[in-house]
Image (cartoon, rainbow, N blue to C red; front, side, top):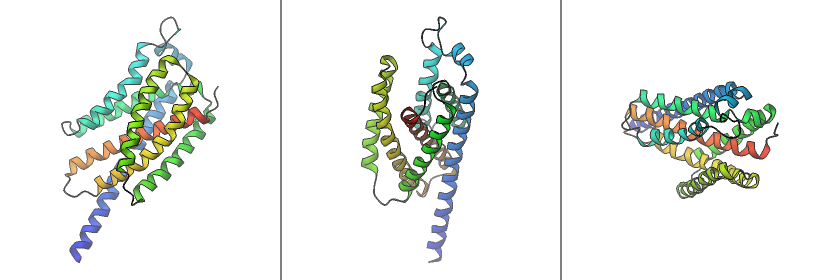
Length: 236
C-alpha cells in the first residue's frame, strides 16, 4: 500500500512538473512572437522587408518568413531524438521569432482593440478545451486523427488562397479552423497527459517532450487566434 501511494504521488508530481514545463514553453513562445509582431507591425518595416521593390507585391523574404516555420516545426518534432536540448531550444526560439514576424502584418490589417479582444476570446476557448481534453475519459484518438487530416486540407487550401485571394474562401477556412483547432486542443492535451504519466521516460526525454508539447499547443493557439481574428476582427 505504501509503495502504491508513493508511486501515485510520484506520478502526480511528475505530471505537474511536465505540464508546468509545457506551458512555460508555450507562454514563452507566445511572448516572443507577440513582442516581435508588435515591434515589426508597422508600415515602414513591412513596406521595407515584406513588399517587393516596386511595392506591388510580396517579397521573397515574406514567403521565407511564412513557410520557414513549417520546416522548423517538422524538424523539431521529427528529429528531437537526434538533437540536443540546446539545439531544440534554439530552433524553438527561432520558430517563435519567425512566427512573430509573420504575425506582424495583422497590426496593419486589424484594429488593436480587435486583436486584444480576439486574443482573450481565443485564450478562453483554448483553456476550456484544454481542461476538457485533460479530464475526459473518452478516447479522442480517432477524433484527433480525423481533425489532423482536415487540418492538412486546410493548410493546402490556405496556401492556394495566398494566390487567389478569395475573401469567401478565407472565411470558410477560418470557420472550419475554429472547430478544428479547438478539437485538436482537447486531443493534444489528452495525448500530453498520457506522455506525462508514462513511466520509464528519461529526464532528458521528458524535457524534450515538454518542449514539443509546448510547441504543439502554441501552434494550435496561434491558429485558433488567427481563425477567430478573421471572423471577429474589425479591419483598419
